[in-house]
Length: 181
Image (cartoon, rainbow, N blue to C red):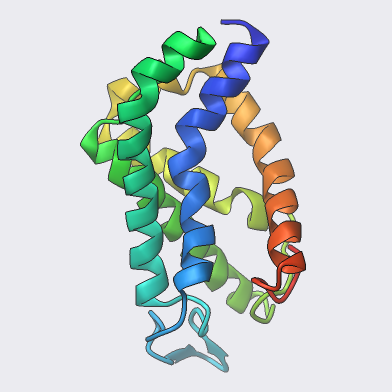
């Protein structure tokens, strides 16, 4: 696989994990997952992690995976790259993992004394990647091994922080986020 093909496959395969957090921001609000509970003197997660945002994020990522699977044959023919399709379990696992990673990062931020929206370099950019890949591996190990080869994983780990910072800066500029990270 050429470098171009590796990059394109990596981004295609991760799109269902890239979309959920952005969809959650747009649809956020509602009842917090932690119900306002605390651990010691800090909230478990905070008001930014809601049931509605999580559900919408997972649904948006799964819908995108279904759409990408439908588009894969035509896109493959047009671009000359063998785009993967997403089994149903993976279509849900990638976005669910992304949301779980974001929730886990929120928990870690609260435990380390960071407030909602505070930066946590590294964790902010890769939390959802680690969990989405783990969920996808558990859901469909053979599919995962065929799609997420070592070169594809390397592209994901390098490209994701760059994409994350860029998309968050755009969301901040548009007034959709309160901080640019």
